[in-house]
Image 1 (tube, one colour):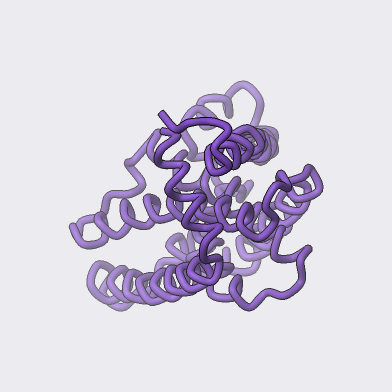
Image 2 (cartoon, rainbow, N blue to C red; image 1 turned 30 degrees about the horizontal axis):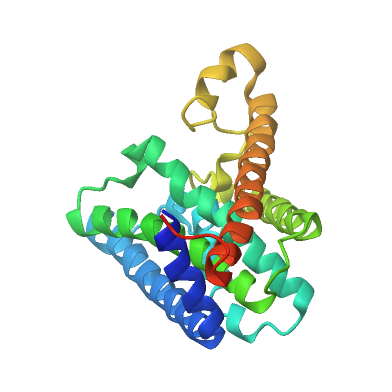
Length: 239
């Protein structure tokens, strides 16, 4: 474990530019693969009719919109917000889906592979976002202001998702971020709470627990980053 962290963070401190290129490549790859996915869903599986429930604006979709612009983001505040989002909420989106993989499966095996690969890539990007954050501000831990920025950005995405749900709901079934009150909560565990708490209450609980889960990952990075720094300085030996 420490050896892997050592390799990742030593590479990041040696060449932060390399991470910018990696983020750009990942963003373009995700965008192109999403276009391919939407084409397959529309023209192969649905015979030319678009299904709005596949519109690409879920938590796991947001990194696709961030990554192409991240290398060119000059504002320290905005850049730290994006990196903090990727290493918390983005990472959470990549990990949490494996608690229930039913949503990753499609009639086409290529689409199923794409879904699994997408979420694995989210995990990789989340880890490397933390590495990039370390390389740009060595010795400086992600602060609670960084986490707060990520939370605000997540809530803005929730607001955007709610708007998309209301605007596009007239065209078909759409439930971006799984927070459309017109449809029962679908997420595992939370769906079981609907009969007890009501759908709208569970939606807000889901949003709150997502923020809480991202906070756990944020605290994890505050522990791991000093560990990585200690390994690189030679004060702690990797195991």
